[in-house]
Image 1 (spheres, rainbow, N blue to C red):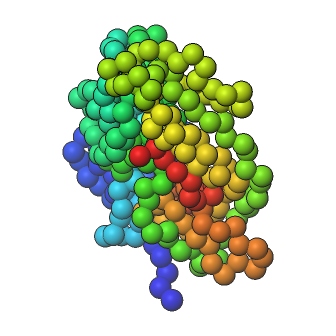
Image 2: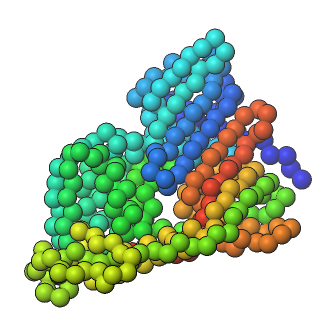
Amino acid sequence: MSIKKPSATITLDGRKLNAAEAALLSARIDLSLSGAHDAACMALWPNSRFADAAPGATLSIALGEPGAEVDVFGGTVTGARPSPRTVEVDGLSATAELSSRYMSQTYLGQSVADIVRDLAGGAAIDQIDAPMQIGAYHVDIRRPVWLHLEMLAQLTGSDLGAAPDGALRFVPADSAGLPLRLAYGTDLLDWDVALLAAPEAPAVFAHGAGSEAGSSKWHWLRHAPAAGEPARVAGALATKDAAEAATRALAGRARRASRCGRLLLTGRPELRPGDQIELTGLPGANPGSLRVLAVHHSLDAISGFLTRLLVEAAGGGAAP
């Protein structure tokens, strides 16, 4: 059996160094779909060649075995804290600029994908997949662009996050490929997964009458959009098709909530929020296929390279 020797490759404003060259003491990377931007924190020796890191500098980090590191973070430096013992450098993904951007705009009869692209402006985009049609959507300057993107993601059952280089990703929650199999004792070190009763998801009804009165009458208000059961009436939706798609998205989110847990793995830099995994070789009951909600990578001299996951049940549905 070969002994893994984890390492890191750090690129700061175009200068690329490995962990030893950068005098890296530790690194922590947090990736999630919670609405928080991906974040990185590094601790360096005071005499590190990167000790001069300053806010605004571009930063990318790759983790893994020497020569086979995988990109896990891309963004900019947001702060540096030098001290007699260390220099701590913090960074946020490139999507963070969308939390400080405000705009006022009204979108009529456009797809969610078109709205997301326009809201992103000049920000780097990795992938946007959201064909649902919106009757009307209003963006106001009281909320940052990122919050509007979160609202659209909730409406369509999409994942809002960042790619390894920090570029924006807006994709269906069930768009992951084949699940990654993790074996207990080899990949999986510890786990704690709760099996829960799935909450009841409300139905979604269109606010406009585009289906009943024709597409040109999308702005007509329906007299009684809901029938008395627990429901949400979405003002942005003008057709039954869009409302049914949003209903499926909420139902999928409820089904995924039937599992909730945390996993501890040996370092797996390729794992990203939204990926699906399967656990094998467990001594007890198997929770089934799981979906990754958040990833925390840590690299230091004491524990080596570890990956912690926050997971939910896999499956569900996103709005087509």
